Amino acid sequence: MKTVLIVDPDFGFAFWLGHTFDEAGCEALPARSVLDAVQLLEELNVAVDLLLLNTALPDAASFVSDLRLRQRPFKVIAIHDRPETSELFVEADATRFKTEAVDEVARQDWIQTVKAMLG
Image 1 (cartoon, one colour):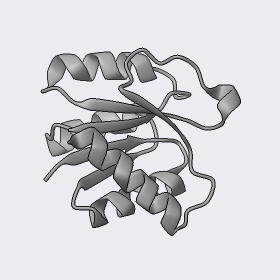
Image 2 (cartoon, rainbow, N blue to C red):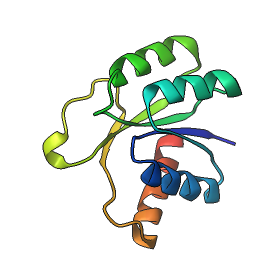
Image 3 (cartoon, rainbow, N blue to C red):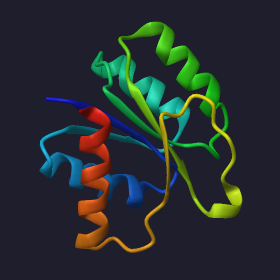
Image 4 (cartoon, rainbow, N blue to C red):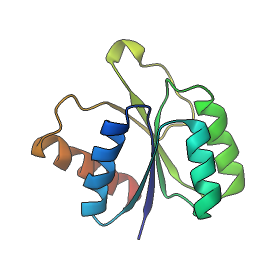
């Protein structure tokens, strides 16, 4: 089973994504901040296959760099809240904007994105 870590301050969005990925056969771990994500990974002692990370969070880039040094290779999807907040995030393999609607169309779109990233 693939492990997806979702780091976003909007816990409702992260929980929705996590539930979506659980249904798709992935183990999803939501965290509200980089600090929460670090603590979660240490407590569970798991490696991630895919990291979905809101790039507006403090220390987002350093978190990815540090994680890449400590564990096996993984993919990163940079999440942006709005187009005007998007910026180049060098550590990302892909970029997505947050889903405004949490409906079946959005759910299927996110599942396809994650499946494509995980191969």
